[in-house]
Length: 230
Image (cartoon, rainbow, N blue to C red; front, side, top):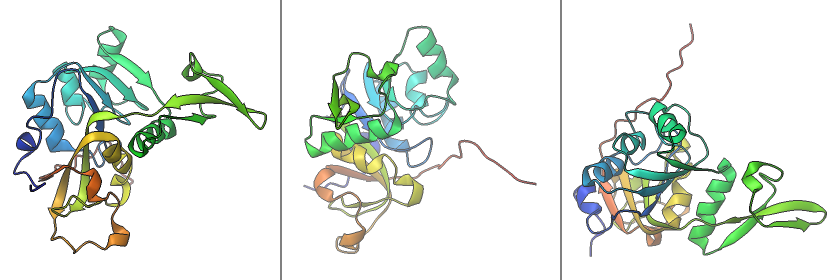
């Protein structure tokens, strides 16, 4: 069966349901699966638990799912740039689980590697450590973090082939590789689909074994904060 689907909506067919866990790649607005997020909004699934570095902005990225109140809980590292996120969280409409960026990335990576948990120094002595197991190694204290496994991973890559092998470009190689592996099912949207065999095996970032479905997208690539010098 071909992994290539004609649209984001068709690629999501049969995979989404209320209350599901989603791992979303991207950092800020860089390397985010724009079309898949839009298709999830159109499908009107609700009570979503989304693990992502951040929650987009008010009118773009995961922010559009917050506008329609489809998100029940965010697992994230940074939640700035989004007034609706702040409003929902402060009013008690949205659950938030803060994770340090490295911890969140490792939770995804561990989930994809079949590792149930790991110990880290990050967060020791802070609210992040509350309720978590503590253990000393060589005189230093660490906390136990559980891995994250999603029902669905959605990622965005620069190039992909029909077998699902992916290559990310520059900064877009952020949370995408880890997110891709931790989903029970993974859908990737790419800027270009190239023939099988045309990607150098040494340059493939996500092997096709992790990718179940693939779409060719048209991406806006919105700039989150434009900075100019005189």
